[in-house]
Image 1 (tube, rainbow, N blue to C red):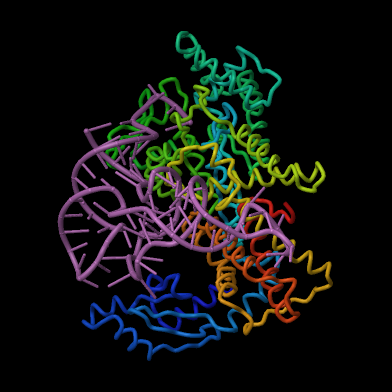
Image 2: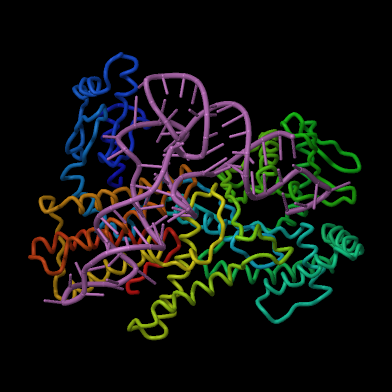
Length: 551
RNA sequence: GGGCCCGUAGCCUAGCUAGGAUAAGGCGGCAGCCUCCUAAGCUGCAGAUCGCGGGUUCGAAUCCCGCCGGGCCCGCCA
């Protein structure tokens, strides 16, 4: 078990209290607030109660160094063995530091943008939240599969297919080319009634399995997806599988959903198939099949989730908040069918200063444009570095992608964001490059130490000062924070955590010189530097950000 | 009209699920720090009636009610 969690368990055992009375604190390593609750029952002051119950504590492990009572709080402080074990386990475990063995199979579905154009800055909020969860779940020892659910059957896709048929594709990046046709046909449809009829006819033929239609859809959607995949790859995001929703209309799952709903007497099967949603608290019916025989998004999604139920114990979707209503309806229907609903991470929209984005109207900043501009800006910054061209490009790329990923993963998903170029192109404090820079500095110290022949690391508790103590204590919380993310599905917690480490290390860096100190102190501090280097590198990896050794 | 989410210094964000110790950072502003391991860094100063009004409580940024402002949704779209 990794350090902080071991310490925490010891405190929990000693106090015998519930988790909600134990908290992280700036005043203590772990603070216990149970005296406040008991004070109420016993009609005594919290301070007195705390002093009383302290008598009953039975300390069994080696990690609790000191207990203090202050203002009713019972403050626990870790001791010598805790810090020694923390440093040594980080140095020993290296790449494996922070690994957990939670086990289980989890499916994480994320991004799943309509294949009608390139990803824009709203979509990548989804991708980055999703991919960071995937990485953190894997570190937690969970067997994770990531999927991109391809909406190939929607009206939007049919519009794109028809648009490409009508106007053709240019030579640019394929997703952008598909968007061009998609935007144009949407504009044309405003004045040309026949386009909507053609789209509808195309949808009927596609769902019916018409060979030409299938070929056209495959071709256009694969083109769009090629571009999307390329963008995701640049962002260090890769899906294990792409699942086409049309599959569920052909493999019998949609039919099974209809039958299951009928068995529960929920399906009204007339010219349209619909479910009366009143008993679930919704005003309007949910339509599952149109008059023309084609299915709707939620129908295929129900089928997809039936499949998820059969194949995974836990499945998580990352969705924009515009999906809240339909996702709740989906969940209620699944529950009515005795199926498990997905766990859902909703995120609020990323808008532009001038308003919300729309692929259809061509009103968006593409992820590709954002990546390119950020790259150029990062490239400018390192122009005067003594690197060759190849390394300059490599570093600028890592810095740019890091900046993007961090900006999105850092803020709580329920917080609406307004996209801001100035912020996106900022590489100073509270950014990924600050963390990367901190990591590079740690690497630099280690490099210099090796060059000077100082290869021994030896942490000594007696030499540890207050800055070092704070830093090491943070390092010990790595897997504790992983666990928090697994339980809360909030990757922003982890981003804040890594940033915190970088800030504490900067503090250490400026106050405690390493290379020049006498040998005992040097070996002690080198151990701390190397431990921090390892934790920052492992942490950046989980954020999908490259841990550069020089920049 | 109904539902969900957000509202913390000029700007951005943490804390809110499990109420408690002076509300924590960053940007911007001002004043400083490179004969010293990368100044993408560091130090100091100024800046907040935690949207507003009630309520619960010994104690509320955090819980409850009402309101205001912003976003999203309410299609045989996704």
